[in-house]
Image (cartoon, rainbow, N blue to C red; front, side):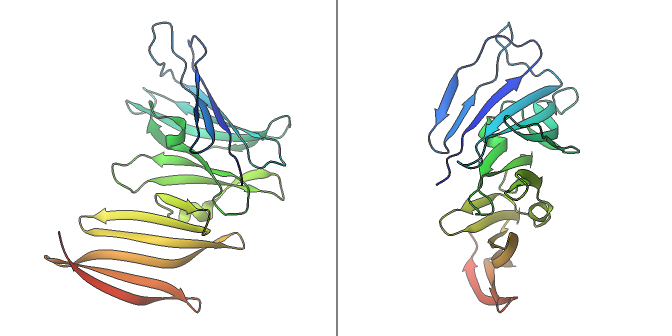
Length: 239
């Protein structure tokens, strides 16, 4: 079992006292609340830096993840805009830089709301993802970084991003990725992926839409002999 330790330090200009730490047992996460300025109000100074320590594997040194962001007026009111992320092993001298990001999240969000550690390709090493933009519904998109044990570093997975892994859930027991999206009233879908030889493999898709004003139809397609074919159609009354 992989135990993930993710600790956070948020640096602002004009910040004061050291924050207290809180431990979350559900994800083995330890994080600190944001420092406060001399008036007791959380600083939203621009620019800013959030640093995290990520335990990738029990046999490896932890990594320091640094997220560089700006706040208002360079970001929308109430938001932070992260533009650059770096990953470096603690005690090492190598740093991988990922720039050109446009990650938007609420300035009062807690760490685990926008930067999430998880084994996302089921290889026994901890990866992480960064929210692209928060949504009112389930259609949340992410930037993905996977750990490569051969190089000992992280790489940004364009395959995961281009596959539209919306609001993903990673089932470690069944080695399955589940993604749910809603495209409008009565229009929604769920996709299921396996990871084979490091690549995503779509194995099942469930798409629901209106068949008539009073009924919905759900079409199920599954991977059979390397081809996605329709295996089921169900009609139900609309609520």
